[in-house]
View 1 (tube, rainbow, N blue to C red):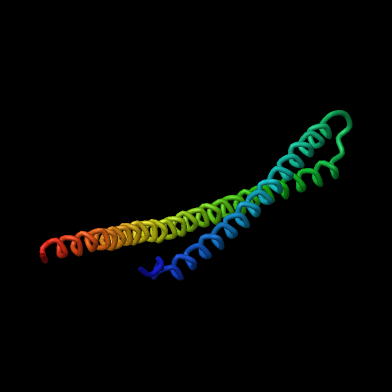
View 2 (cartoon, rainbow, N blue to C red; view 1 turned 180 degrees about the vertical axis):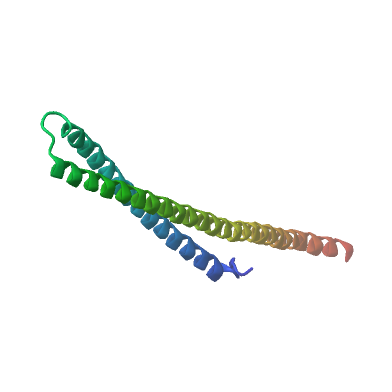
Amino acid sequence: MKRFRFRLEKILRYKIQVEERKKQILSERNNELRIEKTHLEGLNNRNASYRDRYSSLFRGKLNIPGLGFSYRYLEKLYRDIINQKDKVRKSEEKSDQARKQLRVAMRDRKKYEKLKQRRRREYEYEAGREEQKELDEIASRPAVKISSMDIAP
């Protein structure tokens, strides 16, 4: 009997390549998300420290130009934080989308791998039946020759 050959092997290999590419994309998206979150954390830290400095300007002698400058800077930081939160949200959406695409690619690959396993089991079952059939024929041949010799006196 011929050796096992899965007719859809090229499709399976393609599905594996697609899955690997989706894993790379997910990794890139997760790195982007981590960078955006780190940037947001830095902005929040800068905002907190500058708020402390801004509140200290109200103690003692008031510096009106310094207060105006500090207030405008805090407003800018606030806008930057809002923009960065939006970037983080978009990055999370991209990461979630990449994760969903990877899940679909994995499901497709697994379908073909299960089909390949099923076909291999069928092949092995048929090969075993063929082998048993040949063994049965070989085992019955000598018995037939012996019995035909006994009949001819």
